[in-house]
Image (cartoon, rainbow, N blue to C red):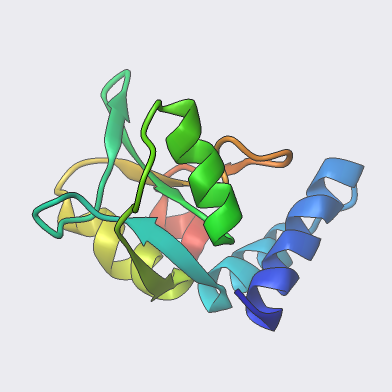
Length: 122
């Protein structure tokens, strides 16, 4: 998806190595362009686990395809490319209840961001 997504992947990798910096991670998420799955009706797809909503977002079409295959879904998948800040500031709150973000949920280095406005401050 480009350099901005590479920055996010680098920050996620830093966390997995034990020296990540929260502000840098959030900043990289805000500037990354991510793939956001949409339903047949064109709405952002989300799932609810234990009462908390989660939007799976993806750093590449390959990561998205891996997720779809794990769900047993094959064929063309619909998505929008969105800036992380838009996902954080607009999309998550549009559901009206707690909704977090999971990056590359079936990938080698998934990363979750529970919805907490104070942790998403830029």
